[in-house]
Image 1: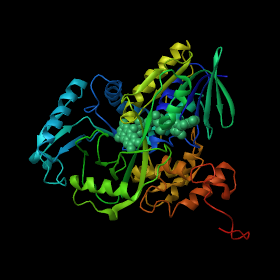
Image 2: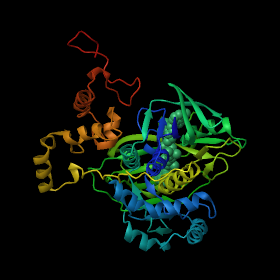
Image 3: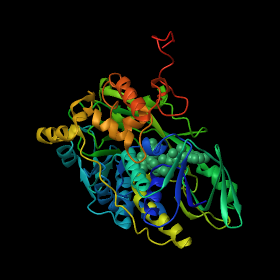
Image 4: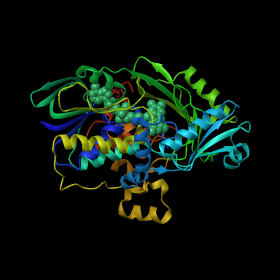
Length: 481
Ligand SMILES: Cc1cc2nc3c(=O)[nH]c(=O)nc-3n(C[C@H](O)[C@H](O)[C@H](O)COP(=O)(O)OP(=O)(O)OC[C@H]3O[C@@H](n4cnc5c(N)ncnc54)[C@H](O)[C@@H]3O)c2cc1C
């Protein structure tokens, strides 16, 4: 019997879990995927939105601004890449002036500081590679960047360090209330907890509707992206938005925390909330729109494309707290579309404290603060590299050439709190496989290290857990690989 079972190991579930680990109790996070951060939290723009566009007076606006203010310190404590380069919302037509003025006014109401409307000359002085046809822009200095999956992994590790269980590869199927606890039927059996928290992202509506008298409808809104090689010098310093539409924030051009350029996303409503395919039409749409901001975009620099699914609740706001009309002990954070990543520190803190209060949990007197990850080898200077090698000779072997990731870092990624068990797991924890060759060079070596560390057969190594084995057999043994 757990005190609290969290369903969903995205950035929201992990932020709640990390907060709860400050309290004494038995907690677990359950996820259908074989690793944490396999939903929207791994595939988004990574922007720490300042909060200029969230509709004033909503939970979205409040938690956006609060989360953005918490994010720098949160990332510092967890050792997660964060930057605050600011943003420009670009207007290319006379009619955009009214929209930008409206965003400026909204920013003031939401308490976002430092915004200014600026004209072409100043825009081009700040960002010389922007389309010179730009007319005006909203400058948003408080806009930031974060590595979304690294944040989620760091939160999971910090929670695990304080005793939170991670039950991965296990889907919640049905929720049933008994006298003093909830029973969750999962793909592996039954789990029981005094309270449950539904943080299941795009699939959260199905679980909610099983137990609530207020039905919700979550629309699956897919966003497709291009990611550009970081070996090219970055032409833009800030995040460049276009004026938003009724479907969201529109297509952006942005640096990432690691110095790539990201282009996208689309906003397409689709039926299947797990369909993270990229499509020819979707990517063409991104490219057509990006050209308005960045006419010289060069597709030869594209190293990969990907997509993520937003969980858009038709009411338009975040739904956070007790599940309406459900028996006691059921909580949720659903409809957490953008700016959910930004709001995660605030949602984690508020929802975690709320449920702990309900269960009258005391403090965890043995709470261990997060241990920030050591600096990545590719960010070290020569003397730091020598020192790292002296401490651990595995720093002397480069596994991923593109991103300069060492064997020491790959092994640490597997040994971490909620450690990597697949190629993608190592990739998102170390960047091995994220560079120009997209794992062409390092995948075999990463799989060998994984097999060795996990004590498993090389042929059992997977791309992302489950049945995603990479090898089909051994040539030496007469197989078909
Ligand atoms: C294209 C796109 C761009 C975005 N850009 C930004 C941005 O720039 N800035 C920003 O602040 N926000 C952004 N967001 C929003 C942000 O990514 C999300 O708000 C955030 O990641 C939501 O986190 P989550 O934990 O609620 O959901 P998820 O990360 O989707 O996690 C939900 C988890 O629940 C699991 N799950 C589902 N069903 C079950 C089940 N039945 N049993 C067990 N587990 C289950 C899933 O496997 C998944 O791991 C963007 C989103 C998208 C899609």
